[in-house]
Amino acid sequence: MLAPGSGTADAGPDDQCRAKVSTNLDLVVAAGVSHLVREVFIATEFVAILSPTFWWIIGRMRSAAPVWSRVDSFIVVPASTQWDMNLRRIEAGNDMTEILAIGDALAELMPGLRKLDLGVYCLLPKIGEMCGHMAGRVASQLLTFTAWDTMYRREDCRLDAIRDLRMWNKGATGWRSPRISADTLERLDMVQCIDDNLCSFIDTNSGTNRTIVFRKLKSLRFWPLSYHGTNRIGADARPYHQRLHLPALRKLGVNCYAADCLLWSSVVLPANMDSLDLSMASATCESIAQTTLPKVKHLRLKAYDVYLHTTTTTIRAIDRILVEAGGYESKMLSITDSITSVHPDSLACTGLTWLLLDGPTSVDDLLGFLQKQSRLHYLNLGRVTVGDTHADMSIPSSDDDRLVAPLHATLARLAFAVEGGREVRGKATALTTRLMLGLPALASIHASPILKRQIVDFVGEYVHRYPHLAGVNIELLF
Image (tube, rainbow, N blue to C red; front, side, top):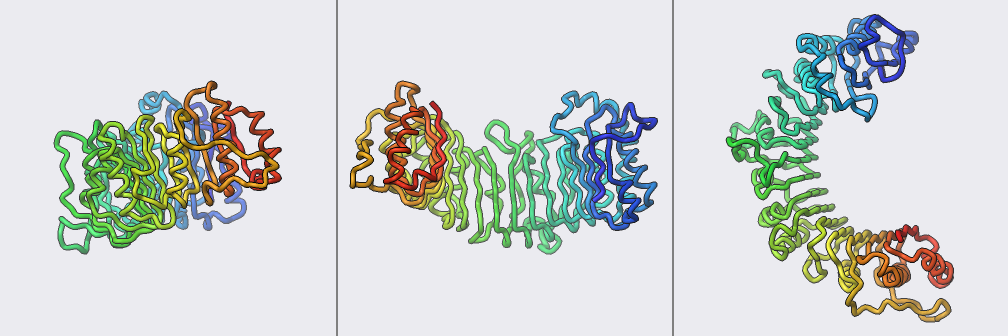
């Protein structure tokens, strides 16, 4: 791997404008192995004028070999996570003609590229132009492509052999998607892209422009850019005219916060898949719950803004998704709002392995979830109320022959916060000790607000009767 990166270098005429660069190029040349280099990795700082840095790198590479024919991977990333916030200054200092010339030079220097990872440099439009121009030069042969924001200005850009494509757009002005082959894709990530980007795919075998078949696509992540309850952009936005068939899909992840998730209404999924990962607003859950869902091994559902809709309707929709999609090996549910209460009896679904609820949960409901969801490994409750409860939180003395009856057989990780602050620390501590004794598989517990010294003394006193306490990682807030 040839790795120009941030660091130090010999001073040159452009040293005042060029970023500090270090490289193992001299070592590669001295060893006589430049013809074996397969990957060029560049990590460079944000500076006011980027062209001297790239010309310096190109010049050093040309001095070693006019063409790096075996290089098939080119990666550009920033050298530091401390980005220069004054991006306008960077933009103003870069001439477009020179930027495009750099893209040409890089493509000519490495004509055999199969992988391009152009990283967050494309957050800068002019650098995005350079990367997009370079991508256009080698587009037909690319197998793996990661692109951000202002890419694909070339009208003739066609990704005919692409297998792994990851696009991050964020609705950038002037952004054009390339023509993309649906025949070869195996992985596709479309993050914060406008819906119309899905109209860029080409199916050379379907014989119709109304059906696109992704014959080899195994993994799809789709996150449309959403504004004010819709994931369409502009007054002329339109629904898809194509049906998107995904017969080989094994993994699907969708982040959508609009009621009309256009991908879902246009996609044809296989009957069985490995995993389904959904992060959605409540309205989206209600819409998807009315459709036919694939059966999956691993299901993850994260719901937002449940309180904005009729709670019972939304919980019923969430429950239907959990039941219909299966999740035979793992089933995860997260409802992240601080208002909605979810009761054990409101979920017909059983078999949850992971549950997170931010809304208020009574002690009775906590115990109800443990009783009903027998496969739980992780439980996180953001607001436990210890007011009115019918549950007996008392525990026998440490020398009592009677052991506390187990509350759950498989729960390994438990986190909860008791509502009420310092005034409820006694009740919260009593609840914690009762749960710790009744959860023999417990590996970690995170609880608040707790009387720390009382918990420490409790573990020391009871560990001889309940040996699993010795292996519990305890995190307490008090």
